[in-house]
Amino acid sequence: MNKNQLFKRQITLSEIGEVGQQKLQDASVLVVGCGGLGSPIAVYLASSGVGKIHLVDFDIVAISNLHRQVFYTLNDVEKPKAATLRKFILERAPFTEVEITNEAITKDNVFKLIDSVDIVVDATDSLPIKYLLNDACVVKQKPLVYGSLYKFDGYVATFNMLQKDGSYSANLRDAFPEMATDIPNCEEAGTLNAIVGLIATAQVNEVLKIITGVGKPLTNELLIYNSLQNTQLKMKLKSIFNKEQITKIFKMQTYVDAACANQNLDWQISPEILKSKLGDENLEIIAVLNNLKLPFEVNQTIHINNFDAEKITVDFNKTYVMVCQRGLNSYRATEILKKKYPELKVLNLTGGISKY
Image (cartoon, rainbow, N blue to C red; front, side, top):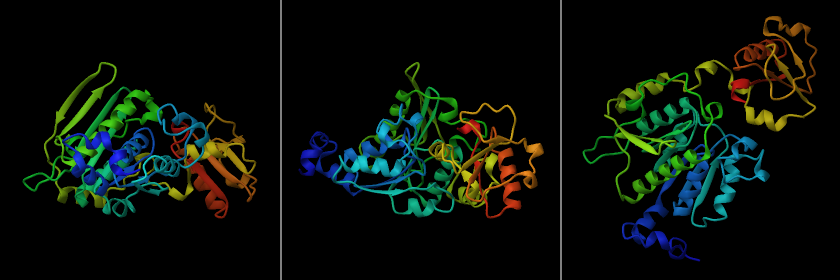
């Protein structure tokens, strides 16, 4: 099998041809997030012949992912998303190199991850991370293909593209200058799988246009698509926040969820990881609020107002997980136990039951 056989239908397009196909082969793309958006994006890009793809995701596959993350199977549940997706891609895309980073993208590692690629794709569902990617791409002058979902609406744009006059197109802060604090992700608000697939392939389309130079990317505008009415509108954007301004913002911002901004990241356990560990006899779960609607059994309930480390009998062979509604009171409990027993393994359920 050769490239001309595999990509015959694509090369047949006069606008693409062998020249365009070679451009795809020479391109490198960073896909941040391997969930509902990122998994189809990565598969379609590899199937189109993009030569290098770097996948970034710290999460594992959960049952609740499967209705929209269709490149994972029941056998993949509890496996790392990035590694699982890489395996799927390599079985069908022999001309694509796939690297993975099985950890969260943060302010500390974002530059290292985006430095070596041509295009960055935002396939995350975290608002702080979306602003992190946007600001880092502006600072490093990298194009960012943005995608986002809210219930039946999807949003797509290509940000920070170099234009003919040497300037750069609008970025996320030109559309939404300040990070909102009350917008739920798809786990909280819910979503249908169709809109997820539509927005993912729209992002793929943007990447392919950028690489091949065919068509007009969604620059200086934000496409908003409503799946219930099959309507779309384009919000025009004007470039206001320049590199100098965003560099200053980047130095000041932490890009951590405001509710968890001061929490020790080493003391956290994600909902997905906790799900994978339920039933472990060395796991001790403590609820720190009464009358919580819990999707799992806890070993004991100690209200945060009565949480006294002196009165808790601990077992250093166990891992203790504190839970509450939003992850704030449980973090207080985590701090209390860690202060009394620094060597004890105590973790806070990140975001609480509301994120589970």
